[in-house]
Amino acid sequence: MLRKAILAALGAMTLTKEKSREFVDQLVKRGEIAKDEAPEFLKQLIKRGDETRVELDKRIGVAVERFSKRMDFATRTDIQQLRRELQKLSRRLDKISKR
Image 1 (cartoon, helix red, strand yellow):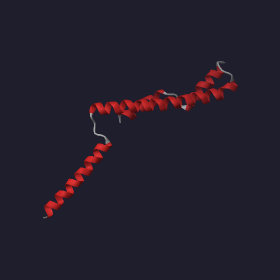
Image 2 (cartoon, helix red, strand yellow):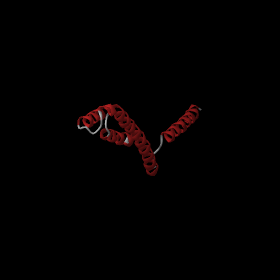
Image 3 (cartoon, one colour):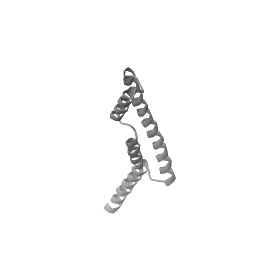
Image 4 (cartoon, one colour):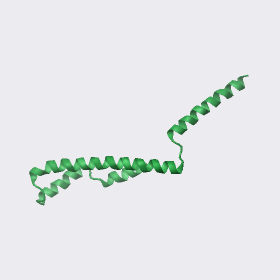
């Protein structure tokens, strides 16, 4: 949940493809880049944004994992193991109670 919240916040801060197009259009209007350079520049801008998001996702994943370990939270695997053990105990109790 923490990871999703952080990603949502970061997503809000990053440029969307539409905003990227608007940004490049403004650069062209101001003469900062040539009109024929705009498509390639936009492509690079979007690619870099995607790469940045992937890298941030990895870093956030590592940070959340470290935090979870420090807080000693039960993992999904831990919970599944406990469920299996409870099912075994429940079956044993059923056998004993039927005697």
